[in-house]
Length: 198
Image (cartoon, rainbow, N blue to C red; front, side, top):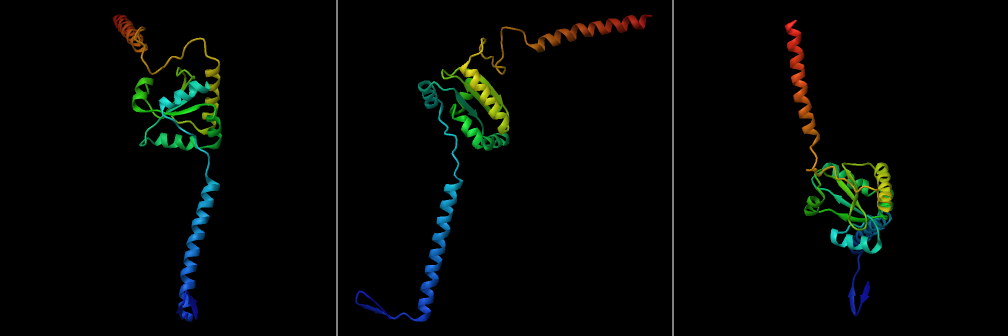
């Protein structure tokens, strides 16, 4: 028999067992939730803190740090693989030397991005110093990030030439090949004609 604030409850053995079962289930659910929260805290890894372009360039200018602009798409399998590499703790630690920025569609046009995933490295003024096109594993990405740091701190004498933006001042290599093929074709026909005449 249990007395609670003036009321009398008769606690039979079957009622007691039901109360214990309910409390046991509640305790079990609570224990599972507690374990899940603890495992999330243990497994939680630091991630790269990405910024939009405007905020990222402000941070880069104020801290005099190079930037790392990541262009990707949700439907791109290579981009998903690259995101997994970007979650590697060694890559995360190396990315602290940069201001990480996510690339948008408008920004992709501005930088002449044609293929994804692409990572563009710029100096703190936003001038491109290096570009990675395609998937890179963690070791290769770290090496290339180190190279980009060297380029941004010691600029090369010549400015970066974007190989994906066509130069309209000089004739393309295709024009040279076409002219060579034209003359070669005439020469081969001339040789064949002379050979047949003998």
